[in-house]
Image 1 (cartoon, rainbow, N blue to C red):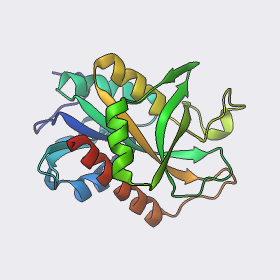
Image 2 (image 1 turned 180 degrees about the vertical axis):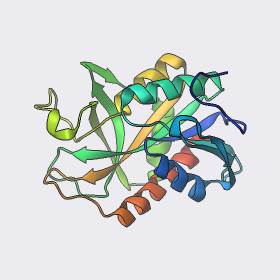
Image 3 (image 1 turned 30 degrees about the vertical axis):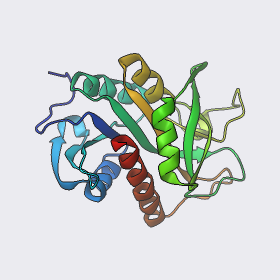
Image 4 (image 1 turned 90 degrees about the horizontal axis):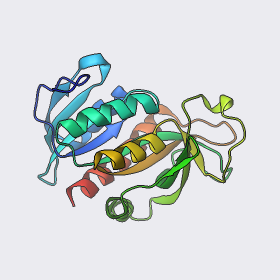
Length: 213
């Protein structure tokens, strides 16, 4: 039995990850038929059920920051998860990014290392988004945006988990990809809550279809 997650319903081999428990609930309501709460330990809300595609799917909150995501991924691997897509948020560095834009992580930089998504899963995710997202480089930090200083490489946006999720998933033998919503532009404009939820639904639906492919 994993040390952190305490599943009360079967965990699917495919999982959508969301840092925010509230977003995990939103995606569960959007993506699952009759979702069942599969975890509430430590506030890491998780849900399992059948997606409209007919495939079993788990939606799991990972908490805040890379260390929390790494721990949750290890538990999910122990519970049989084989492929996953992170649906998260990011802060733009590229001034051309618009609030609500979707970004697929072609690579993620963190702690001096580069993490890559699973090529096949990421390609399916791109196809499912059907031109609604661009593939780019993400930098991941545990600190807040104003604490990150100069970036070592050209990146489009920064977040707190993607590099860890991709690297840890690879180490655990889990195929992983990531799609991020631009929550704040380089100029400091933040997306409205309703628009953020709409973007999360678009990203989540594409993630669920990619995972069932």
